[in-house]
Amino acid sequence: MRWLLAAALIAASTAGCSQGKHPEASMKAADEAVSVPEAPAAPPGSGGGSQEQAKADLGVLLAYEHRVRIRLAGDKIAARAKAVQDACTGGKFGPCVVLGMNQSGGDDPSASLQVRTVPNGVEPLIALAGQGEQIADRGIQAEDLAVAVRDNSMRQDRLRREHARLLEFQERRDLKMADVLTLSQRIAEIESQLQAAEQEAAQQQRRISTQLINFDFATTATQESTSEIGQAVREFGGIVASVIAFLIRAAAVLLPLGLVGGIGLWLLLKLWRARRRRKAAG
Image 1 (cartoon, one colour):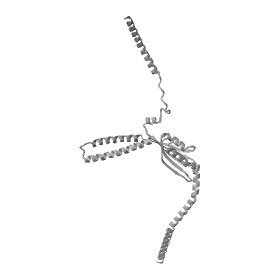
Image 2 (cartoon, one colour; image 1 turned 30 degrees about the vertical axis):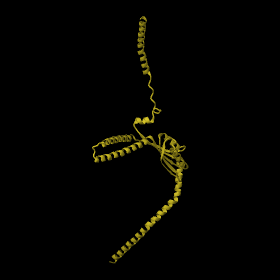
Image 3 (cartoon, rainbow, N blue to C red; image 1 turned 120 degrees about the vertical axis):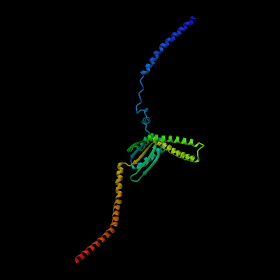
Image 4 (cartoon, rainbow, N blue to C red; image 1 turned 90 degrees about the vertical axis):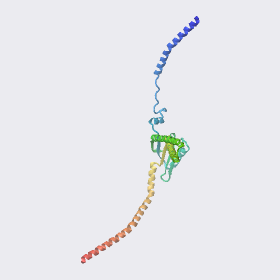
């Protein structure tokens, strides 16, 4: 009994000591937690603040379009345009599609190329197009599609709800044949409108997730001025011939008019002289 009583007293004293020490440890931990400084926020240019996050904060959905004009030697235009086209169709810098291409040769060669690619492929394609050459002009414009996307989404929701209500109403047994035909016609119209809205949404999403680039390849300023002088020299003979042809046509038109006018003037003079003679004789 003595041993049991002693063990109980020892246990009670140990528990009391532990309870007395526990609040101090808790306060110390709380003080340490309060004294720890907060981690600094990531700067806007770091990886933590991405461009997509900035767009989301602004509430915009942008569709980008780039315009790039490159001047290079005329004999390099076709090859450079073909290289950009092959890089796009081959997916060298990511998914890409060629939307249009025009090319002209002769003394003043030029080419134009329109592609749509993912954002990561824009700069590599522009660098490939202007590799070692002069980028004479470059511009970018963006269209905010946030309102259009929101309106289209609301339109789809409204059409889906109306479509579901009409389908429920169509299942009623007490409908007349005229009502059934009217409902079927309205359901078909809603399905057509919903399909058009979904296609528009897909087009909007494609414009937002990809970017359009318009390339314009032209000759250098020196070569262009030289080409203009040469073209003017070559056109000299044609211009002289055109002027002579114009004078001949003008003479062909004015000669009959001059003859008719001369005959009419001669008749008027003759009548006037005859009248004067009659007056003098009277």
